[in-house]
Amino acid sequence: MDRERIISLSLKIAEVRAEVGRLSQLSKDLRALESQLDELLGIQAEPENDTLNERVFDVLEASPDREFSAEEIASPLNARIPSVRAALSRLVGSSRVNKNGRGKYQSVRAASKAEGGIALAS
Image (cartoon, rainbow, N blue to C red; front, side, top):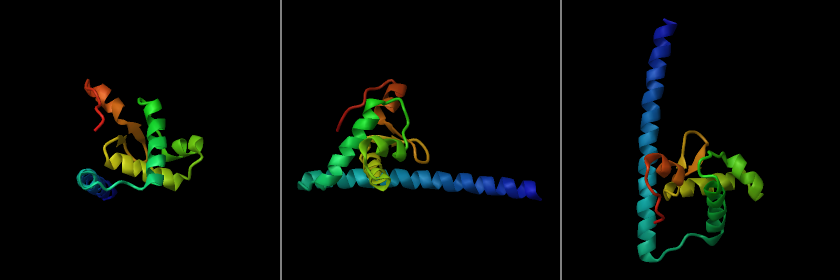
């Protein structure tokens, strides 16, 4: 009885994870489209967010083959962890950074190198 329940729960977890991944991709797509529209309309992001975004991005770009947590990024930047998480979310949404599982972030250059391609800035 326990074995069947374990298998059943494992399958449900896999289904939910797949759905979360799909929703995450849709969310990325939405943010990218919104960003394109903002660009066309001449709307700019808030400057204070851009500064932290760029600082976080620079940390990831300095070691493109390494995965980082928000805590690992926040420490050298003397930034608050929630602020770094928000910046990482914006960077993932703009496809400048990859999220490799729960709380792990990496430069898109690493994925591009693994695929044999070249990452181009948009």
